[in-house]
Amino acid sequence: MKNIVLLGASGSIGTQTIDVVLHHSEKFRIIGLSVGHNIPKLKEILSQVNTVRYVSVADAQHLSELEELYPDITFYSGDEGLVKLAKLTDYDIFVDAVVGFRGLLPCLEAINNGKDIALANKESLVAGGPLVKEALKRNKVRLYPIDSEHSAILQCLQGNDKKEVDKLIVTASGGSFRDKSREELKDVTVEQALKHPNWSMGAKITIDSASMMNKGLEIIEAHHLYGLPLERIGVLVHPQSLVHSLVEFEDGSLMAQAGTPDMRMPIAYCLAWPLCLDAGVPPLDLARSGALTFEEPDLHSFPCLELACRTIGKGSALPVALNAANEVAVEAFLSGRIGFMDIPDIIGRALDECSAPDPASLEAIETLDHETRLRVGLWIEKV
Ligand code: MG
Image (cartoon, rainbow, N blue to C red; front, side, top):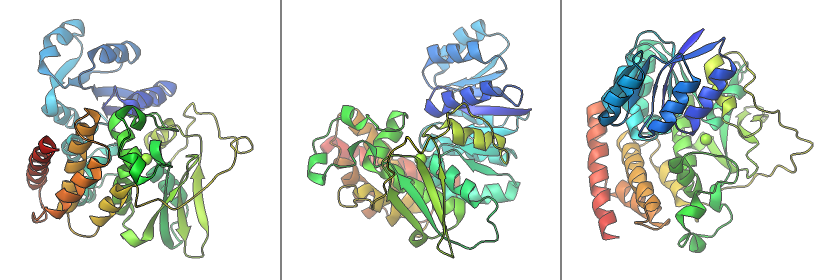
């Protein structure tokens, strides 16, 4: 029996993690979880999952009501609550599925607490990659990527440790606007951007997917997870989202991992590693799936991809600025304050103006993140 702490339980990855756990309740048990502001969803989760003993919510004002309703559960709140969950002792694996930079601190706390990590929060690896890797090594714990692309790469590498890897090839769906030109992208709406053709995900990652920043963040993630330089990590647009990524070996052969686009598969892989579990996902029927196509990404229409790649191998400050500027810009786009193509403009400017030294501690990363957010917020007011 593996005990699990799950951050971001009400989100897309969170609810699918709960689904996998309930599918295998003889193997997994959620003992702690966090949600943001969605208290009705929390109550629904607690009616399904009866093993939860610790819960953290975003806002302390809900605590007294919840404590009265669930006297057997210990409640926490705020970012401090996420840290308290990370510091619990009686669990085995920490699933970090909160959105954004706020996932970094609890991730580090869980690693320093000696717990294995199943990471869906890519922003923490983007902004704190070197720090996270150093903590993993020092505490001798493992990090399993929930992201479908990195899970695919991990699966392709299994059993191939004697072969020399030439290249990682990350596939991209191309998001909601795959066929649009740069000119057409200037006038797209939030509603259009939120319609992802293949994956059902939260708003932030769906916008990142539409701008292809998601792929940029994933290249940074792959660079940290698998230790390859930028020139040995490629991207292929694969609109069907059935091949989740590939590894090219020195003899020129490619290993690919394919499957139905359903996040329960990579989630189950993380939880059960190195075993393979039925995640409740129907197998992919290649005879019925139609043609699989692959093409080069259009960097002119989707400059976010190039902006993310620009930060790799140039120290640890630029990725922090990239991530902070992107989070603020995506929020501004979602609330209608800026246009879609303002997102890459704002991020490009944040990178150009970032002259901070490489942050060597979590505090320094948090300071740079905060300063970038303030600066970008001022630019947005003037858009
Ligand atoms: Mg992904």
